[in-house]
Image (cartoon, rainbow, N blue to C red; front, side, top):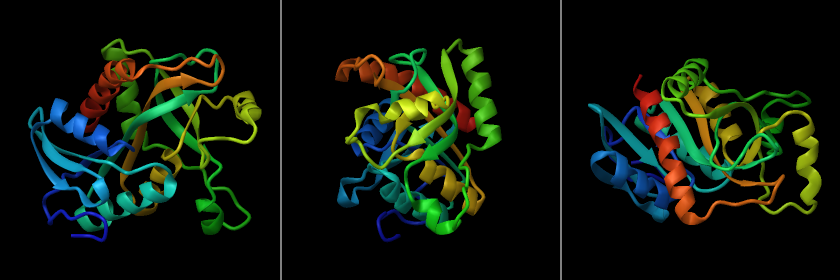
Length: 234
C-alpha cells in the first residue's frame, strides 16, 4: 500500500494504462479487460487489474494535470513495479489537418508546466516518448489501417486560457494538440528508466470550434484503447 493507492504488492501489473478520468478507467476495465479486479478507490481514483489476450494489465485513473499524474506514476513505478505506462486521453486540436476522432501519438510533449524548471535551472529538458513503444504504435496503426497523427503536443496547466488565441503561437511551431498530463508522464518515466507513451483522441478543435458529443467520444475512444492495449503487449 502506498500513500494514494491501497493496492497490495502484486495487485498491479507491470503494464498500466493511464486515463485521467477515473470513470474512464472503470469503463476500460469493464469493456476491455477479462475479470477486472478493483484494487483502488482511494479518493475515487479507480484502479483495476485484469487480463487482455493472456497478459496482465492494469488501468489507473490519474486525475487532471501534471501534479496529480506525477503522484500516481511515482507510486506505480516505485511502490508497485510498473514498467510500461501508456496514457490514454482526449486532446484539443491545434491544426487544421488534425480532425475530430483522429488518434494522435505524442512523440514529445512541450509544456507550460514548471516541473522541469525546478529540475533543470536555466535549461530545457525535452520530455519524449519511449522509442520502442512509439515505433510499435506507428506499426500497429499501419497494420490496422488506423489513421493517426504523430509529433509534438503541448501539456498545459490551464484548461481555460485568458487569451484563447494563445494556441496559435504553438500551432505555428507545428504542435499538433493540447492536453494536460503527457509531459509529466514522460519526465518521470525518463527519471526512473521505464517506458512511457501517450495516445490521444481528438475530442475538440480549437481551429474549427467543433466538439464530439459524449456518445461520439466513447465510440472514438475504443480505437485508441485497442491501439494502446495491443502496443503494450507486443
